[in-house]
Structure formats: C-alpha cells, structure tokens
Length: 376
Image 1 (spheres, rainbow, N blue to C red):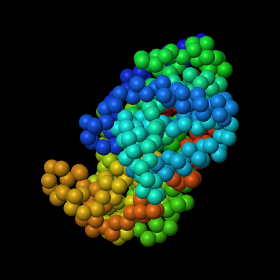
Image 2: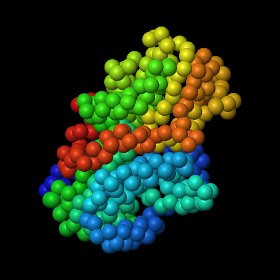
Image 3: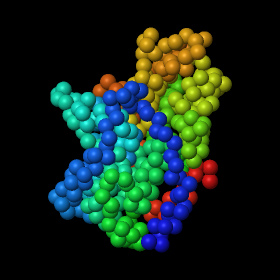
C-alpha cells in the first residue's frame, strides 16, 4: 500500500472540487434522481460484461455529457475507436453531469429512425466502483476534457476516492485488490486533450490546420472553447486556449481561439484581436473547440435569429450567440455543419487520436499530480 498512500498524499489538495458548471440544461428541478441507488445495478452490468468478454483490462472514458442526439453519435464513435485501439480491454463511457445522465436514461434521445433510445452512462465514481467490484487487473481512466481544468479536477477526485475505497452507500471494495492495483502500478490516468503545452498544443493545432486550412483561404477561422471562469480556473488551465491560438497563428495568422467563460477571452476579445490584425469584415468560419457539439455549440456559437441577439448596449448583451454577434458586426458568418450539426473535437479523427495517444501513454497515478499544472 506504500505507493497508493504516496499518491493520495500528493493529491490531498485536490480533494475539494468546485461545483460543476452545468451545460446540459439550466432547469435541473426534474433531474434530481439519487444515483446512489443505482450502483448495484451498475455493478452487475459491468460484472456481466467482464464475464462475457473474458477481458481483464478496463478503459473508462469520462465526459461531461450531453443531451443532443448528434453528441451521442460522437460518443458512440469514440467508444468504437477505443475498442479498436484497445482490443484487449472492455471500454466504458461515463458522464460527470447528473442532468445529462438522467435525461439520457429516461429516453430524451432518438436514433436515426426516430425511435426513443435510453442510455445509461452513470457517474465515473459508480462505474469505477463497478470496475473495481469486477476486479479488472488493469484500469485506464481517460479524461475527455479539452483542458486540465475544473472538470478534470472532478475526474481526479473520483479516482482518488475509488482508490481510497470511500463511497458511502456502496459495498466496500476488496482492500487487497486495491493494494494490488497500486503495487502493480496498474491504474492509469489519461490526461486531457491540451495537457502538454509543448506536445499536445502544437499537435492539435496541426490537426486543426489540416482540416481548416482551406477555410483560411476564404476568410478568418475562429474556434469557441468553454474555458473556466477565473474563480474556477483550476490548475490555471485557461492558458491553453491562448497557447493554442499562438500555435495556430504560427501556421496561419487567420486563426483565433476564444471561449464562453474565460475572462478576457470572450467573443468581444476575439473580435478585437481580429480587428488588430486588420480582419474587420469578410467571411468568418466558426467551429466548436469542445469534445462534442452540444448546447454551447448549437446555441452559444451557432444560434441564429432574434432569440440569440440583444442590442450591445443592453446589460445582457453577452448572451448573444457568436453567430449573431459577428453577423451584426459586419462579418459574413459561416458555421460548417455535417448532417445539420457542427462537429465536436471527438468527431475529428486526427484530434481523437491525440486523446487515444494519451491513454496509451498514460502514467501510473502516483506520478500524475506533477503533470497537472499547465504553468510548470
């Protein structure tokens, strides 16, 4: 247990995680199901999968979640890609948002034929407990976050609690099994997409440029990420958006990167940087810099019409969508779509492969703490 204790001491500062910023919907009054009651069903589901597959390795993918049908297709694509990359493993997908979990489980989504589809994703803590109860001998936990920010801190906290055998309401796991995971260095943490400024940032810039270089021949290309408000800028991770813009502009000065929540990097800030470079009109292509294209991509970025436009002198003008904001400022705004939807990063093969490489190169958790600080 020596290694597990050293890891837990290193992560003690991360035990307190800020409240989750909900993006799956603002009204959660009908989505307060107590998921603790579901852990036993989940345990049995995972045990049955392990028995059928006879595999002894588990990969747990952790996303915030979504309520959009196109996003579930992106998650399905991601699971399939991981199953191909890790044929020796059972692959599981979890959501960290209770709202997204509950809405998916009650059947708010439909397939291509209009049939209602119920999907059970569970929180990472419950799936981790189930994976532990099934006694997989090797576990990979892969963050599908873009930056190592607030949501990633929640992933770390879930793994920490799992290794401490600390879930109230769930049967305790076998301490000897957890000790063996630690002694065998058999539990790994895959870092977010833009974890490393020297390797990940230029690689993602390269992949994005390969896809969108043709658009820069027609106009300017802007990416909209999420970002964390200053008080939730865990690990000071917001700097990754600035670093990505710099890396993209080394390839072409017509690339810009903004967010919906990072202070001093909102759409007005993006426009000011565009104008400083002389891009004051013409075509502007908008893309989501998020793992999936959900509410933010469809509404905050691509929302069209009066519903998404408030006069800039009004106090709530920041609620304007990027599409309406830039359109009213004289740009010819274009939101490229596939099957009537913008694409998220998980749907871009070159970018998805960066996440997969993070899983393949994931470190034993004892050493993960030191790589979580973007400024170091």
